[in-house]
Length: 235
Length: 122
Image (cartoon, each protein chain N blue to C red):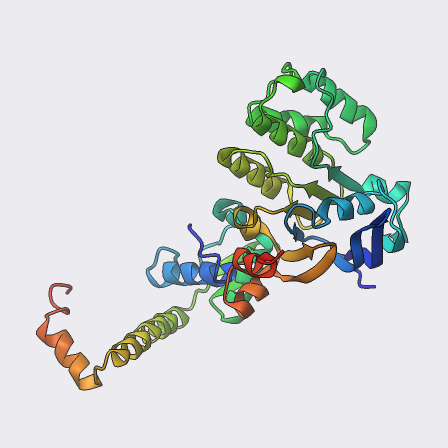
């Protein structure tokens, strides 16, 4: 195993009853890079993230974080933002922040307040009253305010207007550094491709293609989005 | 900067920096922004900028001083050479495209001279 490797997945399978969600997935995620986990709805992106986050148990195969099987220790390394709206609606934003502070040792309240101030989310706002754009930004802000080594953002651009998308991309870029690793899932490829180091195409639970984004542009003579369309056209 | 996603981003950034060097927008010996700042500025991943700097160091157009940052080459010769390389590439493209539409080299020179394309730019 290389020193740069943060996450290693070997022969991973996940079945729900008789439905196969992930099939023989092998992956190596290196430290300090941003990965795009790309695929249409239902391709298994969320399942893969939930398995890595330790929320779903794999049917078979290994998931190693920093060389060790998933445990409470690896979970503490990972800041995971689920795609669903998981924040309790009756809370005010300040209550959510307090909750995160209690929940996660590495949560940086200052960072969160600074980000929220920058994106004009008042901490007195009630979560259920936020627009979907603001809710999306709040979720990303909370996930990025943890001082984690490894971030997994599931569909951070989904259901969010174009301007909010730019804000979210900006937040991601500003909190990213060479000691952090990110996996971002999306089907909105053109928006995000210029910030990705590496891409993983997931099709019907199978990894169809993975590689360095720039090398793919060079060797295929097309954008990641173009390649995405080619791979998934018949999906 | 608008990017064409069909071409590797690092190649597009290299072209931009080269242009700024030959036109003097970037001065010899000038300090480049950190890859982080430059990446944020262009809205791209700073690993991409790090790659740009590395490639341009190999081409001896940039150099790094440990702990101080990345700088534009101080060699006027190298910059002159770069300018020559870039011009050569443009001319070669031009000749290739003209040949595609049936021009000989002689025709090309005649065309440029008779149409007075070279006047008024002294």
